[in-house]
Every structure is written in C-alpha cells, then in structure tokens.
Length: 345
View 1 (cartoon, rainbow, N blue to C red):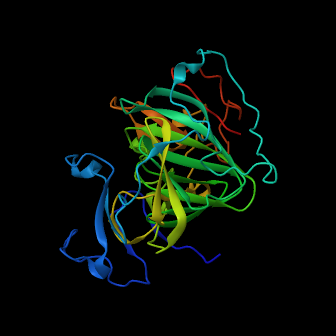
View 2 (cartoon, helix red, strand yellow; view 1 turned 90 degrees about the vertical axis):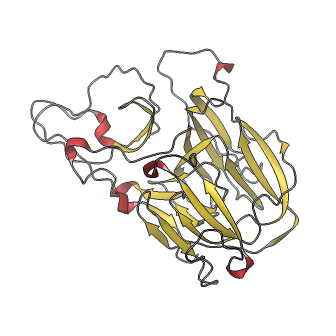
View 3 (cartoon, one colour; view 1 turned 120 degrees about the vertical axis):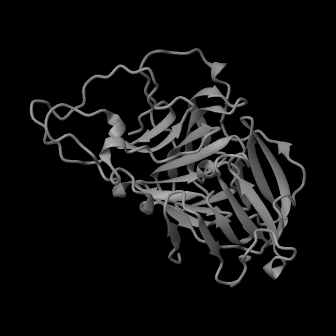
C-alpha cells in the first residue's frame, strides 16, 4: 500500500487537489462559470449558512459528476441499527456485554454497514438532539458500496484490525489506538484486511470539538496539530452493474444505484472534513499533589449541548500515565453521576 499523506490541524481552513490534476482548485472564487477540467462545483454544508464564522462549517468539492447523479433511494433491511430506544425497557443497573463474535468470512461475508449493531442511545433523532453507540464487526471490504449518515457524525474507534477508509476528501488508514470522525453527509467506504471490530459514537445535531482548556492553559490534552485530514484523491471509474450508495436517514437505511464511483472529487477546500487522530499523542494532565482530579481532564473530543458545561457526549480515554499523588491510591473513587457511561475495554 502506498504511503498516505495528510494535512494537519483540527478545524483548520484547508485545501487540497489531486496531483494528477494540477490547478483543479479554482482561484479567486468558489463557483466559476467553468471550473478547471470542466469539474462540477458542489458545496457541502455542515451547519446553517448563517452560523457565526467561528461555528460555520462548509467545504467546496470539485468533482467529475455531482453527487446527485444517482437513481432514487429505496429502503433496505440491512445491519442491526435502531433509533427507537423504547424497544426495550430502561434498566438502571450496570450492564456488561460480551464481545460480539465476528462471523467467519467462509460462512458469512459481513462488511461495515451490514455489521453495524446498535447498543444504546438517548435523545431524539428527529429533533436532531442525542446520541447512539454502535458496535461494528466485519470480515470483508465494502465492494462498490459506500455509506453516508444524514442523521449525525460518526466517531469510529477500531478495536481489532485496521481500516482503510475512502472518503470524498481522500483516503485515511485508521488502526487500533487511533480514531477517526466522518461528519454528517460525507460519503465513505471501508476496506478491511482481516477480521475487524470496533465501536461507533454517533451524535445528532452537533459536531465534535476540542474541549475548553480553562486553567490548563494553551497546551495539553489533544493538540490541534495532531489531527490529520486526508489529501485529495479521486477515481474516475465506471461501475458495471452499478455502485450502491447507502444513506442512513431518520435511523433507517436506504440504498440507491449510480453508474460511477462517488469518490470523484479532484480538489476541495474548506473547514468541514473527515479527520483522524492517534491517541498516543494525547498529552495527559494529571494530579501530582494529593487526591484525584475529575475524569474530564482526559477528554479528547466533546459534543456540546446548548447548556454551557454540559455535553451531549464526551469521548474520554485513560492512557498510561504516572500516578504520583500522596495520600490516595491509583484506582479511581466510586462515582455517582447524572450521566450515562459506556466503557469499552
């Protein structure tokens, strides 16, 4: 596999073009009358047009064919995802799940989409507020299939096996101890090389952000420069028999067919992109005197709610670190909180 290249920086204004088509990115305007190479200009908005500049998310994509060039979507019965939390009665007890068994490829081929299973969730997908946690397990690549989520953002955490993720912005290789975020509306396809398993944190209506640092100061935790964004890469490929585009909308899956690969973006620019992060780069902040600090000091990414200081979801890790505090001990205290915790091991 050729070494993949990335652009660094969380939430940066970035631009990229495939080196096979120099000058593909228009200069001076987003939507010229004729784009270089006769490409189609397409804007992908991740926020309302009128959001303040600091929260406005959009990117311009310059592609061989517009993404609307497909046949009508049809509902499909695939995977094991849900948004109806009332399907089972609420249980206030601590719950544990055994690891999901990955089927053998010789018995049943399962790719990322067909291997999605919903574990839990909260909120309301229709009002664009809440979250869900899914497990994925797969033993085969997504062949001439891609997926995009109209409901929210996917934070993907591989636990076993590595993922080669094709996106409209380029390619990313994501391995255990790394995470990636595919934001709302972005098409992606996943190749695997062995039996693969992990989990997905999905948030509705908001995007993941870096947590505020407060008294910590300017540096520490996850540094923006360590987040990597794929560089432009495209394929101009006709697909005999059709390419399947799967859309998650209102918690259900729909599929449509088109004649070409959707990964036909030759150049792009903007601040709304997929990205990956290596958890080994997390700069731990820890207590050095006595007692324990709150676990919020281990927050990698947060999805904020409208209430200041209250998140819809926090992605938190507990990496190896020195524990040198006096008059306490290494295991954390028992903790009763008014939130729900999902802890994969």
